[in-house]
Amino acid sequence: MKTIFVKAFSEFPGPRYRNLGPSSGQEFREEILIPAIKQYGAHKLIINLDGTCGYGSSFLEEAFGGLLRDRVVTPEEASVLVGNLVSEEDPSLVDEIREYIADESTRGS
Image (cartoon, rainbow, N blue to C red):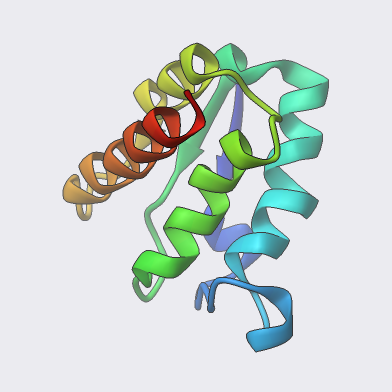
């Protein structure tokens, strides 16, 4: 298993898109998540959400919902990925991301 620590990307996760500011959800998806998924597979990734100063919903939706929009993962792979999310500091983040994945899965079908 490969663990990705979001805090290693940024302690201050930013906006949805790159053009809106640094450390965006788009940047995290494109520069961190997609290469890791290609190298290890969604089922072998653990994503640790702890250690940041918080998340905007737009960051989380773009980073994780965007995986489905970009067809990087299937809905089944996205569910596995969500099952491997870790947040001791704020477990509700996992539920929030699960909702974004579910919404995007429904939209895509």
